[in-house]
Image (cartoon, rainbow, N blue to C red; front, side):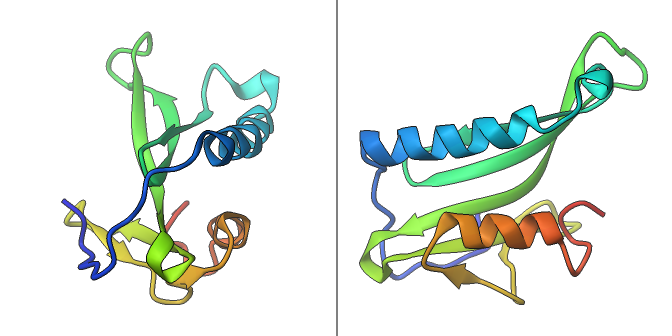
Length: 123
């Protein structure tokens, strides 16, 4: 499903790293103002070696159901000691984000997604 071809295998997060990521991402989720949370929410999913962030909105035709739109994917590759950032194109496959494909920290790549200088993440 990923558009990347990794030579180095990713490694599962430790419990400490998973807790650190949850703390960081929960803070981001809570940044959505309460007054708009019935129209917009942020969410995330932590896998064994990756993190996907989502934007959630009510479905147009059935507002009681929420629709998740994947925004960005982050993968940690232990062998390279780096995080890699992916975005989705129209084909709905993950592709390396060329302006900043990797960084030493999750926070650096997350900041790039928030800035979104190319408009690929938040439109």
